[in-house]
Length: 415
Ligand SMILES: Nc1ncnc2c1ncn2[C@@H]1O[C@H](COP(=O)(O)OP(=O)(O)OP(=O)(O)O)[C@@H](O)[C@H]1O
Ligand SMILES: [Mg+2]
Image 1: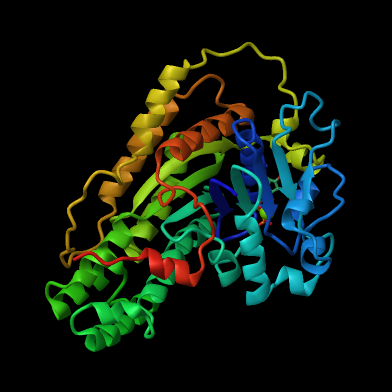
Image 2: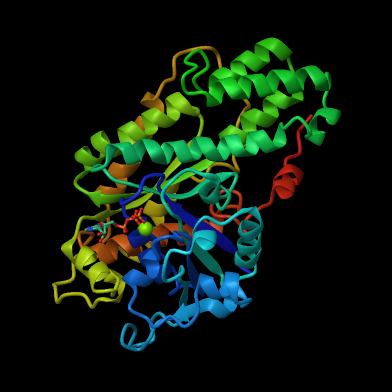
């Protein structure tokens, strides 16, 4: 069974999910057995970027009764002559569009989730399709974002990435606070609370209702209506402990990427979701012809030998460890005082300043030849491995894709 399942998603298409997911999974497999699953089931994108003969794919899983673990393809010697990536495998999407596999129903979704939860690998990376619908959101963790990819070159995709965060948080709140939820039996004034919360959730989710723009405003209104109540801390923690991870694709300079990608992303998260989320930048990938050519030639950049270059002044492992520690912001363990938000306009300044500091630190002290995309992926992977070793499963990735019932069970109100 996987130690962690990490989805790579973006909301909008064409920003580099498959490129990031594939090379990240390859790079991660040098640390521990890793399986990449192509969940963009309509376009079979992973098999189109890896030139490996596929003998079984999701068609065989869904239609021929094979176990998912029997549908894993490994790399042929032509792609991996030295066996460096022998711990990498991928599950390909079906060869052609097959309606019931591409847009699977709840039964098939559950079947696939169960099978992913059983895959024989330490790490499972999911290459998601574009969109923010249930067939994407239901494969994402409920207490962090997985890895979000966006780029300065597609502003609407930046907004879509922050919509994913909103969708995950609302999915969890909708499950926990559904009318039939056992939660209400355990809190004072259950009936009234139920009506109030669901009404407020409807209003926050409705983007046209500007009076209640985000979860901070929602908590303030709830506090006014309920007074001190265990539910307030429960919701407040759901938001404060939520972790957002992102990778910037098509990096074009610190100032540029900050202004055209990070700023709109953070501003949108703060105004539509909450200013109290913890955001973590995992790194960036430069725009590179070698990446694009690698995808077209079906040999991902990581499987392409490096050009001969003079080695740059690479950071020592200790220096790298230090940067990673300073910039990953592992702080959930620190007790945070549960603050009830005061009614005030959303303030993005704080979160933005922090993101810029981290980006500068990462950039100024980047190890070696960071302009080679292989180094970009190594850097991202180093940071991710550090998280995998030090963060709780609820903070980064997930040990299994949870059902509604499991999400409900995990949610224990304090007080
Ligand atoms: N860093 C990069 N440098 C150059 N080209 C890139 C880079 N990242 C992605 N591309 C190219 O951009 C295109 C889209 O990338 P990719 O398929 O990875 O995106 P995606 O988000 O998975 O798209 P979709 O939503 O269609 O699945 C591809 O042609 C890819 O080769
Ligand atoms: Mg893709």
